[in-house]
Length: 353
Image (cartoon, rainbow, N blue to C red; front, side, top):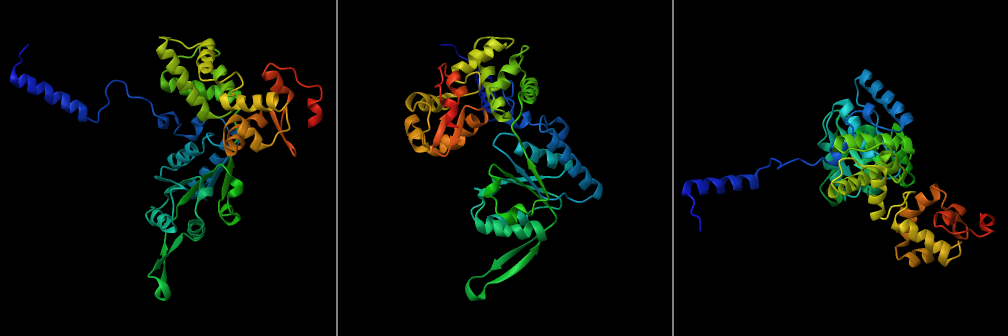
């Protein structure tokens, strides 16, 4: 047994304790998703028309020296709605308050947030279509007249006290614009629709993210990742991280296209970006239902998933990429789906559409 000097031993223990409770990172600090987001509109990749419209919108507000009108960002998940909201606040150099529709349970929750806003501040409400109805009605008045009515007391003696709010900007994000009530939708001065990204723009985005993450991609690797990212930046960044894991485990200094393919095959993502569930849906239609048509409930039962999951997660991409068609009689696999599964399509497959 080795004896150590008492004071030295205590000092070592104290240093170890300090390291355990210190807020300083140990070793290399991981890069967060927040750091992958650009801070300025100029650095936002993709959506060129939307960027030009939003730049004009913000420049005009700055020249008038007033907070801009309310903004609605609509589009599928993962295309950059939250990133754009952060960019707007940064471009205007004002604080941003972040909440979501499901987080606001009562009108009082929203009234508390609105009454604490400062002049020019941005309020970002994600999934704004999921606001409860009383909160929506409160938001109508706040967005248009910049006031909220606070109820004091209960019963016949209750009274409403109007509170004037400083001028602020609401940025709402929604994946289902059609679910927004018309009065709420009409109060947004600018509506931006985000579209899926073409492969070329995703490739540029992946190269930028690789630079931020310190990942060395060989020529063609970003292209391989972009083809598998379903036109969505969030998926592209997620797959890039998984390919990075592959490279770390295999001690690779540079990630080539073959490495990308091998890594994503492990995660069951094929060359068209189809994952396990996508392929299960196509296989069920083609092999079990002879190409279709098949109803949604039968299809979901065959693949062992909820019908809502099949309808909202799988079908939009499969339809957009031409693997699946929705008909009045049910879902039908296209000739492209048969060929992707390595099967010979039926002679009358085109007659079903």
